[in-house]
Amino acid sequence: MADLTHLDATGAAHMIDVGAKQITRREATATGRITLSAEALQAIRDGSAKKGDVLAVARVAGIMAAKRASDLIPLCHPLPLTRVALDLALGDREVTATATCATDGKTGVEMEALTAVSVALLTIYDMAKALDRGMTIEGVRLLAKSGGTSGDWDQR
Image (cartoon, rainbow, N blue to C red; front, side, top):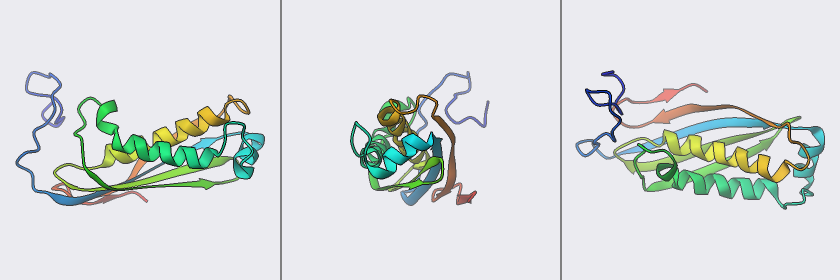
């Protein structure tokens, strides 16, 4: 259990102490997608979904979620985010969400980027479920992170 930083020597969960860490520029990018019917995708593309502008609402929801990640994930540190960017790209049968979060802090922003993507995709589901209840959210994952003592990591 020594490699799991959120567990103490007895195996109990705890929030790690980042007080001694240096403040560095940290950034993380995550992605995921929702697959949906052609009808639902066309309504999103046309802006004709009954609940309104799906992409605009999903973008705002993702940004808001990144700012609240520590309220949702029990051992996640609250961070002063300096940037949250959320891109929603429409494909043939899917919408791909990509979020990039940044901070100048003592711990990384991976959870914020992953939360932004997840909530943006859930918002698309919520706003389009009257058209397609069989939508699938998949592939939510970290693409890259930079900063901190563990250095850079990139899987793009």
